[in-house]
Image (cartoon, rainbow, N blue to C red; front, side, top):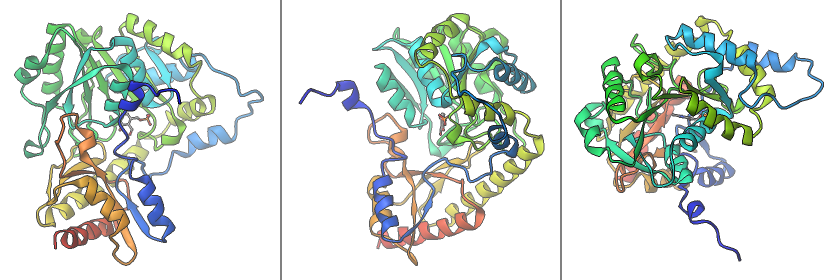
Length: 396
Ligand SMILES: Cc1ncc(COP(=O)(O)O)c(C=O)c1O
């Protein structure tokens, strides 16, 4: 048989999705599973976005411009300006999800063997995108003990080598829920400028900032214009994960020209989904106010519930809709599988994402899980009860 590529063999499995076969087997047995493992919100997609697809009269479902509809990019630019992100339509490339924007960014600024510095734990698929581009991730550790705050700037500088091309930042953070302060963003900008690095900021959770704390975009720092690249998505903002629309944003024309070549190679982003995403931009502020209120109360309920379970340590998220919980176990992979294969409480169980896959440092986060608070409150309460009972039984 012909050989598979080494790159392919080295691609990591998604820690979020790898337990799916066990979950499917449990469901076949009739088990009810509370899915805390995946960031699939249960929030309703704005009606205007759904209607725009239902009521349009397209006769030919054609390709669009490789950078996406101009009308959509123009409206997106207005949305960004309202969010202190001064960009124009030609500084935006619409992509097939934020995922594709991350791949375009990696492809445009790195060569095989280059390094990118990323605060860990980080969004697990960064590992996959880096592997696909032959890029090495140099992790900088943040820890649950200090709520996953950014490590001192001197730690970043110690990691910069002549291979370093970029710092990648997820703000607000998945899986930590950490929201970077204005000072932290400004300090990172200084390092990027001093060492001539790109900062790729994944801001797909921009709207999900709690307790009245404001999100600060990397794009709001004028002197960073040539170094800053932003990744965005409609997936979480409008609960439109299945639309598969995101975008890559930068004021650096060389970056955009290069990213366009990647965009042309895949022809165009999906047409119907762009129609829905353009309509979604008219979503009134009340929608977000309600959603933020809902996530805030889910977060509070989850954190309070987890803190009550003996031996569980958790950092309070300030944004996004995830938290990392440290459990009184040795190996979260084994525990997560056991939850699906062996445990049940009144025929119910939970699915969590083992956190080791969110680190690139080996043997780190082994006793941690990522929990997404994307379930209704009554289901979240039940899921926490199940976790408490499961830990008791597991450790008996
Ligand atoms: C931090 C982060 N970035 C990017 C993505 C990719 O999102 P999508 O491709 O659905 O836009 C996700 C999805 O969960 C995410 O959590």
